[in-house]
Image 1 (spheres, rainbow, N blue to C red):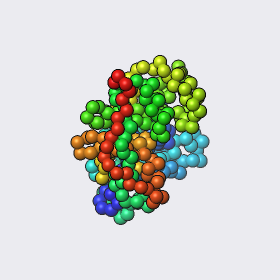
Image 2: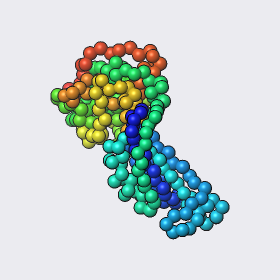
Image 3: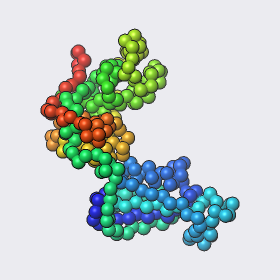
Image 4: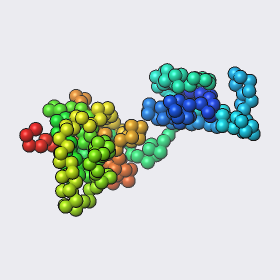
Amino acid sequence: MPSTGTGQCITIYFGEADRWQQQPLSMALLETLRRAGCSGATITRGVASFGAGSRIKTATLVDVAGDLPMMLTVIETPECVARLLPTLREMVAGGLIIVEEVDIVQYSSRFQETLPDIPVHVVMKAPVVTVSPDTPVAEAVRVLVQHVFTALPVVDAQQHVLGMVHEVDLLRRSAETPVPAGLPRAMEPAEQAALLAQLGQRQEPVAAVMRREVVPIAPDTSIRTAAHRMLTHEVKQVPVVDAAGVLVGIVSRIDLLRSASAGYLPHEGYHSWSYRPAGY
């Protein structure tokens, strides 16, 4: 959402008892808007109402106390509103949806107040440790354990990002072979050897477990935008790619926190380093 200018306000009126796919409609709407990258949304719970059925609902009536009126408000750009409306109309089976033009006088977020206005390439890490799609899962785990990060970019021979392999995904795939939570970094050599031995039989390729939905950003992207994307997509790292789609760096939440403290050091060079085990 722009900090000033013209926007559109979506207001949705519905009932507290309304549901969407076995969950409360209120939380389903918020989750949908969050995943769509909206800047924010608010749900208000009313004290009394009546609708098309002319039935008055109040908190004092025991039989309808669980179906009080709810109102969701979200303000976004006209383009974003047009993209959201079809989904919202599908989710709200019974209720009212209105759209109004609004003048945005001021919009600011905590990130705009705390993160400096600098591009991602100033704080990103380069070169980048990567794996290829045919790297065995066991080798990917070895790299994650040996380095201080929780995800690896998966690239082709031209350094185009094909996906990301996250430690949490590897843990989920290791149900038959229990792995210490979080792939601990501070492991004794004997513990690390035992962990790798447990995963030594996992010869399936990284392509089978990687996330193909990637959220790349350009080197000149503001770190404020990078922070918003990380929160929206629930990831801790995002790859940085140039205009040709080639991986040039990676930025993590810790990099953003360091920049917020004004103690960051620029990383020089746009060079990627690929991890490819012998024979691959």
